[in-house]
Structure formats: C-alpha cells, structure tokens
Image (cartoon, rainbow, N blue to C red; front, side, top):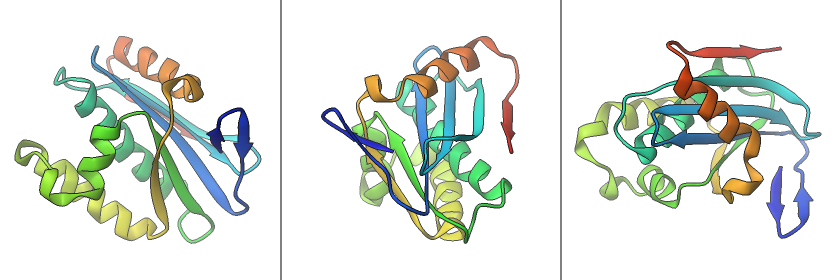
Length: 148
C-alpha cells in the first residue's frame, strides 16, 4: 500500500514490504498483499553502523524473504522505505559506499531474481509496524522471520 496524504493506494497483484532500520542496531519489515493482509514479518539485530546501514539490511532481508516465500513470478514487490539516502544508494550505483559493496551486490542479485521490484519513499509514520519490528529486532539476539 502506498499512502499519499490520507489516501491509501493499492495495486492489484502487488505485494508491499514496509522496512525500517534503526540506529540502535535493529531492522524489521512486514510484507503485505494488495489487500493489506500480512503475509510475512521479520525482525532482527544488525551491526551498530547507523540507521542507513540498518535500513539497507532491512531492504536486503525483504527481498530475500520475498524469494524464500515463493512469491517470485506471482506478484511484483513494492518496498517502502523511510530513508531517501538508502533509496538513492540502491537506485544510483555511483553513490554507493564501497564498504558495503557485498550487500549491494546481494541486493542487485536478488532484485534480478524478483525482477519486478520498486523501492519507494514513505514517511516513517506510515510504516509504524515495520518501525516497531525494527525496535524489537534491536532487542533480539537473532533474526526472527515467518511467512504463510
């Protein structure tokens, strides 16, 4: 779902994954179908390298879980992120940090597998469940993920 002002937009055949990464070293996300039904969730710790790194890891996990849940080819994926910086890194290769090159390589590889993926900016207030999952992830010692 994409929120524009107070309007909620849905796209037939799309799945949405709201992601969040926190400076307190947690990341989380929630995958929903076009009706808003939750299909998967994840939360886990990440290295203490800042909020942008945590958001990058959340997006990486979102793509991996979409693939693991056998959603490839059945729908397209819209990833919602509240980090303009990370979206710029992903869409503009020349802006990428060399120290996270392996993560970008994984993202690029998974994006090719998914093939129909778009990463969009959303305000944090429209991504509350993912934000709460990231807070939970910061308190965990391992990654928690499930889907159905």
